[in-house]
Image (cartoon, rainbow, N blue to C red; front, side):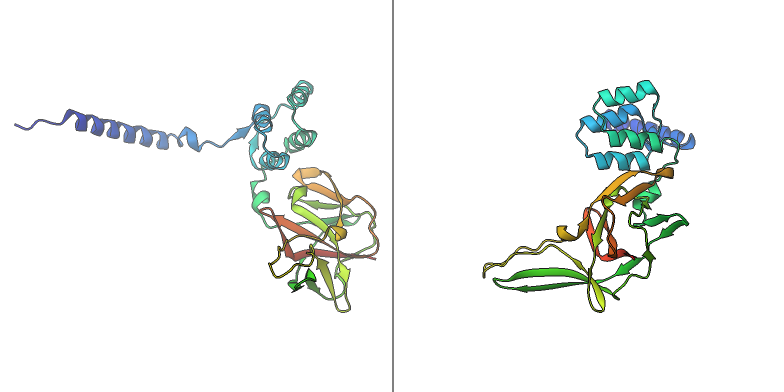
Length: 254
């Protein structure tokens, strides 16, 4: 006569039971863990209190399903809970807009919002050049082909729209050359024989300060803080925290 191991038999029974429950839930439309997350006022307050960056919270608001209370009382409670103004603005502007998860992962895109409609800027690809010498330092630039951008505007206070957050864009003034344009990067002082440290990024002297505000349909509106002087300009997209210096969304101001 054979006797079943009660411990082994118990484990087998529990395994069969778990499989049956899992199959039943799958037929019913999935497990609770597969349900899509829905952001609420409490979710946003929790992210703020956890110390998450403002840009991360806004990106989450734009990409997730949401059910916000933006009544007067709801907005007052958000303010009292310490939610930043920009986050509250994003909650209000995104309430009636479908989730834009695709926009957050799509290729960078930016357009000039002129009186005749929007014109999407096309990227121009350049080549990074680095010249360095001991005790002299280094100079880093991105060289763009042609001396002028194909797309020209006369607007000295242009407005641009983008599906990406404002933090993902840098506007730079390009340095003209005889047959090309140059995007200056951060310089390094001279060094001895011990080595040097190189840094990527737009030279601060050529960076143009931007003002951002929410636009329609979940877009972000960008405009220069000061009127632009005639010349060559370009937007640089910041992806995964790093600026893509060799892809410049360029335009000229006449």
